[in-house]
Image 1 (cartoon, rainbow, N blue to C red):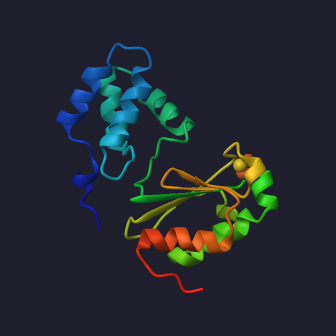
Image 2 (image 1 turned 180 degrees about the vertical axis):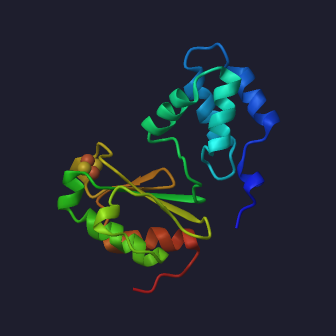
Length: 173
Ligand code: FES
């Protein structure tokens, strides 16, 4: 369990980030981006959004709108590793739903039909699993990204290999 204080960007660090971006074009986006990077769990807690609002003199509703509009901002703690499964039409027809379920099976949770767009972080904070509408690589579907590396034409066996490699386990097939 993480101590709440350890998941919030310190006042000093946030002041420094704001100082570097205040008054510049795109200051809100850049500040949120750097604040997220500085957070050990790679997300923007409510406290950080509120602090950014005060320090940049931007209404909190506007800060929230930006943080929720862009998919690269996380409002929940993120795992050390990320697995993103494409759920676009091309990938869907090549079995991405089954891949998503398989990720769940390997990491010990169940991805229900209704959770298709949900993100899930394992209790040990090792993995965050998300979906995306399209990676723009439909010709190589199905496509997933693991720790920002794209794996195209992925199949069940390759998926197990990639995850087990991260987990440092031997693969038994
Ligand atoms: S639908 Fe998956 S990459 Fe386009």
